[in-house]
Image (cartoon, rainbow, N blue to C red; front, side, top):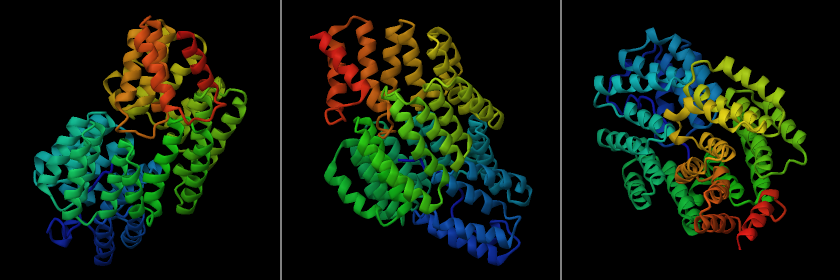
Length: 475
């Protein structure tokens, strides 16, 4: 379930005069307001055309660019989002002070400067205490950093300030779910269903909670509401179903689901989504220990870049190349991303170092890999990759206590990222850490957890065969 950011609510919602959303054209303002109305219903792609229409009428309409960027970000099109945030920032002097604060936050969101984004949002909250969007957007940053308690607090404040908008409810429910507080998540969403016009998003939230709880009846019930929206089906249903298939070692099923997801992404023109569903099966094969055709995995990653070469797609292709042992390709892609995201907190402290650490692990240099990952420690609470790779490094360096802590950190994020492939592998690596500790009881229990999770897995997966062999030696 993605965290959904909000910008300034519609001019009607704020009961502000029309001119407070700054544009020189009444027709542009009408298109903008119609788009805002669709957003308040939870539509994701439909408002984009109307915001673009507003920009066509008034090319200097800064807030329209900011809105387009927000919508693109919410459907996984990060590069298009950044381009629009940059354009909005360039035009910010034409906007009101309230709009400038929002645009400045989005600019920092676009550049990836998390500290500056938080400072901008906190200033907006102090300056306009009765505006709910900065609180929601601060919650989104909190979520990205794994600070779900803070994210919950900010989202609940957003609901207090504006109980008729769905953004606070959905983000608070996500934080509750990440924290394992499922009943509170469902109760809050049901309240939101009564008070807001965002029914579709609310049902998406209930679907996600049902996935985390493994409640099949609730999943089916909520999916019936979602399937009428292709964008929501893509993001909430197919992506999570495919991810869960990977988590359970069901490789064939995952490939079929990713293929379906790719077709739908293509129909919707969502190129980054389309690219990612080519990459993830390649990543899956390598994580599952299927190294018989590494070149194929790298080729798939390259094919994804031909569809979308955003930094987000590029860094995952770099990780695939690193896992496949293709160091020249991995370094080439890392250098490209480093050039394009020089100020991005997560890229510079986590995403790029993760690829570097994998390359070091390929050379048996566990201690150096641990050092490379140190800059990410203050930001990594909400990112699974860095914990997983750091855990592998600690295992290689014969530091099982620290390794176990890293794999446990991955598993603590299950409620936040139910479809993350690493949720299926962390129990196995945790078992290996316990084995290094010579803790027989914990080792057996962790292997049993992994084998139970993979009880319906495809039997030919190399890492499953390895796990069964390792477990048999314990008996």
